[in-house]
Image 1 (cartoon, rainbow, N blue to C red):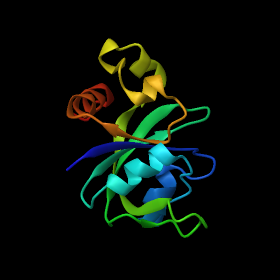
Image 2 (cartoon, helix red, strand yellow):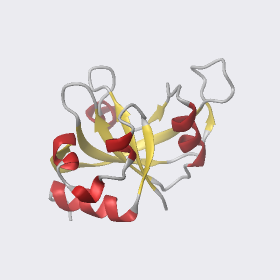
Image 3 (cartoon, rainbow, N blue to C red):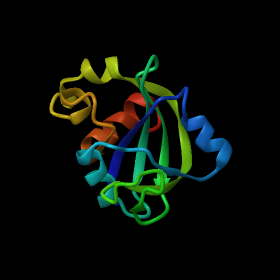
Length: 136
């Protein structure tokens, strides 16, 4: 199992929308690096859901439940999507400010490449996010 972070604008689609729908596809990624990450996902992988925009916080965890497949919202066959389900809300959101204040995250793409919408999460970063959120 691998860990990922996926960003979304909560005004457009939030983690809470995913809870309401119970399953949806994670589509609309148009960055080639982020698309490469989606194509590497497998069923059972877990995703930190990050609300961008005004919130700038990780708020929940979702699970990939499909193999990657071509994104039906794109005419470009290089872009992929996956189906995801909500797993749980974090007891306390972990803000970008919290992450940037912790030197353990200094090398993470979330800090270094702020525009990247999908990125891997190391085991150590995952565990630290769970601790900061009160989940672990």
